[in-house]
Image 1 (cartoon, helix red, strand yellow):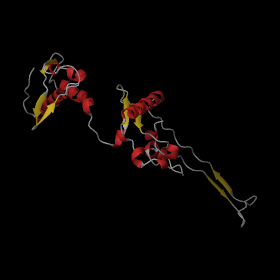
Image 2 (cartoon, rainbow, N blue to C red):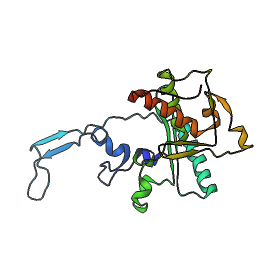
Image 3 (cartoon, rainbow, N blue to C red):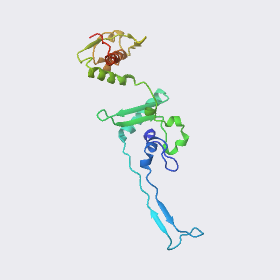
Length: 221
């Protein structure tokens, strides 16, 4: 469980990837030492010098992962990837009150005790190493910024459409269900979050950028 997070350790117990690698100096501790006086046959000499320095155990590293949530996230993710015939899938679950990561699941996974059979590409924690578009999750950032900068309020309405031009290009809204007219209308300010409308998210971001850059803001209200 959580193989991509915990990582792997080599034959000498040195951390090579993941938490094992990052906190290796904390986890590995200090080896002990036994110094003894021996004869030519490498036998200890009775009454000779004998000095023993005990090993010091490494420290514990306590993660924010919830074992129950992590376990179930991996099961659900595996089923989703296999049923959709996808190449890979990942799940990140965060506690919104603290920002703590309580689940970091990636499939396909691997056995840290037999990692040599798995290519490096499959062992990477792609949830934190790879770049990818945030998608609809970024709507909350632009929405929060527009509220913080007093660009909108809960009673404000926007005119939605199926296409909106910006920066020499365009943003399309593809209806997922129902008639297109449902999307092309006047909506409340918070509807883009519940209806997942990218054109409105772009409008929020544009208004925030214009205000920060010192340009006047214009739009429907």
